Amino acid sequence: MKISLQLLLWFVVPQARAVEAGASVTEPLSFSGAFQVIGGLLAVLLVFAGVAYLLKRMTGLRESGAGRIRIIDGLMLSTLDRLVLVQIGKTELLLGVTPGRIEALHVFKETDGHTPFPAALDQEMTRQEKTRLDIEIC
Picture 1 (cartoon, rainbow, N blue to C red):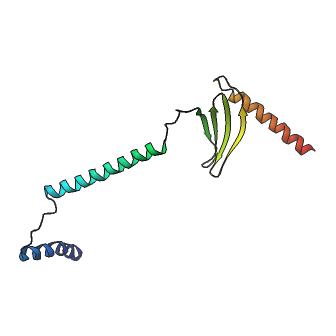
Picture 2 (cartoon, rainbow, N blue to C red):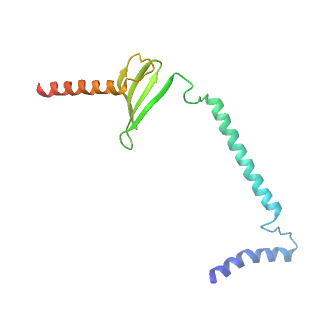
């Protein structure tokens, strides 16, 4: 109760002194005050939208899919690691993406639009397993 009385006096007493001195006091919830706040907010939003538009125009950002590079599929391996299948022209790349590195794991040459990914992935994993076994045997 004591705190609320102090807050009330903190707001009321300066205005009462200003009225006694003859200064004009605007009400905090007047129409002109609300209009100023809304107008200021709209001005800030317009400036923000204008700057974003100019940045987009100046940096030459293109929408995804507009170029020759397409992301065909992706698989999250963990919260930080993922596999991404990317098509560049008729060539497809299987990329391993981590926060500090992007590595080409396999290149699929000259695809005809149909992705032979599952069969090629099985072949590649079998080949790598054989290579690993050959190295361990030696």
